[in-house]
Image (cartoon, rainbow, N blue to C red; front, side, top):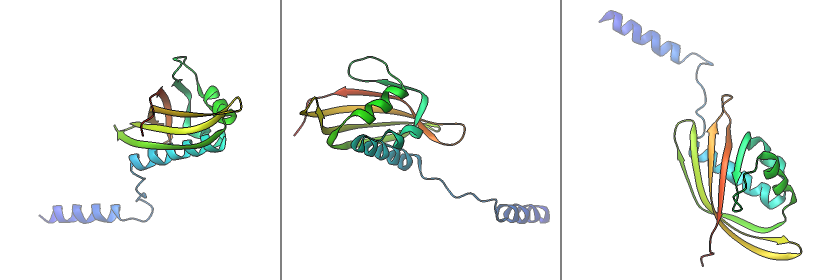
Length: 149
């Protein structure tokens, strides 16, 4: 019995040593939601620098055309698009350890060739916790859908 009490006391003492406790990270769902909002702000401000660190070098995008593109194309798209408005709807995030899937809808208006065009699409983003501890999007897929009222 004395050995158990001594062992428990030592364990508690080690756990409570200064510098051994780490601040608990944001829950995965909150962190991914924040990353998705950062992505939205990048789109609305045509600022690819906001999302460059959030996108993996091996990132793959499957837009509605079906043509696979990568990180450079995604960043160029953000830089060259002129959105008048945009919002994320129906955001859902499910985490699986070091991976997470975010799904949602995007509704927005942008200017293309001098004309205002409305866009409504569903998207799926795949996020992975990298070896350095940062979360990055490794894949996205976007499908245009009919607007709902």
